Image (spheres, rainbow, N blue to C red):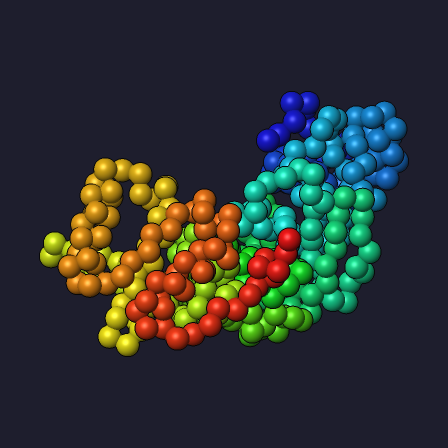
Length: 329
């Protein structure tokens, strides 16, 4: 969004059209280097700041308007303050829809490992040896690619399981492909959680496709030592192929876990299909457990005990493992 005050023109303009294109592309934010290139002098810059026609956002970075900066302007200012730089981590996560926008967050940028890592006010700076290979050009501001951003966000988590959850979240809320993330992991060699991140990619490749499925995979199945179920298992329902979320095979027995997210199961047609799937499972002798988002997210430990009880009736002889939640008061 552009400010309502007119953009200034240099005293000795060299290319008005190029100047206006720059201001539009950078949301009214320019660096000293750009100002000098377009005909402004240092004295003119100081005069505009003193007269409060412009705002000095960072050292050598100016908003050529007054008033509150938009989020795009804040991001541009952060990139120019550490140039060459690219938006990364939580800020890139907002751009790639991994994170909800939050103006209270600082702007995160990544620079080359050889550059200064000193932060500016409201700007968090990261350094990367792979900087040149991770940046997407051609947007309003340079930004670290989605696959690398997913790795960055996961590596910042405090535990391996939370890193897996972060990675699965990035994979299930967008069309990010597991193979793209695997290539980023091979290139970047993250400083920790590599096995956990590869485990998350394995779940995504096996068919974890939603937030509820990710919670079940990590907090119910993985955390408690349940068998690794098959994902997106095809079954015949009234002559059509449908897919069950998770299937456990115990000898000749099969137990289905259906993860019932309301967003995908609210219409009458889907409800009918689910009823027919239940009947098909009963006729085929498959055990089944239906879990919703609310009860699974609220108490995955209880859900693990319930699924284990069903599996044991079918002959599973394994033992549940206590997770951190199980031990917490």
